[in-house]
Length: 150
Image (tube, rainbow, N blue to C red; front, side, top):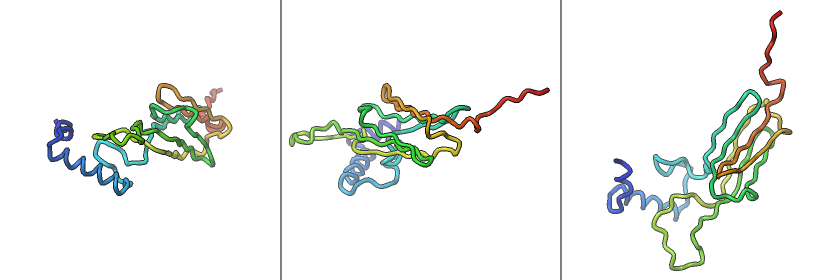
């Protein structure tokens, strides 16, 4: 029901959303969420972080990127994922008009603070079907041990 209010081009809510996008284009985006349906600008790509008994797993959802242009680094317990997404809109075509732009474009960087028990020497990253998976092994001393009872 609410989606139809926002998507209808002549609705009052649609006009406010269009005005907000135009103001963002002119003045730049703020650190606040642009709408209730999105995260704050600059927080792309969306990520999931979790851990297993043996590793910390980070999944970054970044479809349409070239894997060779994604920068993943780990420094002092902070994982940084950076890259750039092309807009897909021809910049050199003066006749091109954009009516709606929902896909983020430009440079992005996300940082994740990791627990102290990760092993920075054992990190692997893979990119498949638009999902970057970074796996950081936990130190063996932090892994649960089974103790046999005598």
